[in-house]
Length: 236
Ligand SMILES: Nc1ncnc2c1ncn2[C@@H]1O[C@H](COP(=O)(O)OP(=O)(O)O)[C@@H](O)[C@H]1O
Ligand SMILES: [Mg+2]
Image: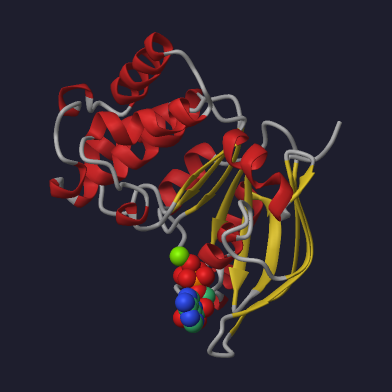
């Protein structure tokens, strides 16, 4: 059995020369739920963008057992659901239906199954009434939930979410948490929502300045106030 996510000594600099990842190694096992925390600018989003080949740094990255290289990107993107920090990067179709149907259509599923997948995914994020709405006219919180539906409709084996609760109202946040709690798949989720991290993620990885500075049981790391303070985090 392979690791779900395997990152070895990953380095990445943006074109302007800023070094955003400085030798990151991380293994995530199947069905593990891992939270990625750390201050703004720590490199969380940069790391996440390496997991489906949007960015390509120096080092090794394998996801679902496959090296993240050009030839594998189709397979990886079909099995790994990634929700970006900014939902505007994810929604591009004329209607919500089209956005959520895009993945299943791309996977070649029959029309009836596509429709079922879309309806189920929208029900899960409490957005069933939005089928014919225009994605880019929605509020940030609504867009976030649609963005999450666009990956749930693909029935992913690995879910990677970048700050999923940012901008959600309490009810939407709660229902997202319920969804994550009940999904028994591998998850890597970046967040500043320490209450959610404590409630749902048994393992926590702290990043700061392009490095992983701590990786362990959430309960233990959250009890270490000096560690949290040193990296701009607060005990929930
Ligand atoms: N496109 C970019 N060009 C140059 N620097 C960037 C770019 N995107 C992010 N950075 C920088 O890389 C660092 C890590 O950013 P990011 O991965 O977004 O951090 P986080 O998600 O933890 O807040 C930050 O210092 C950020 O300013
Ligand atoms: Mg980020």
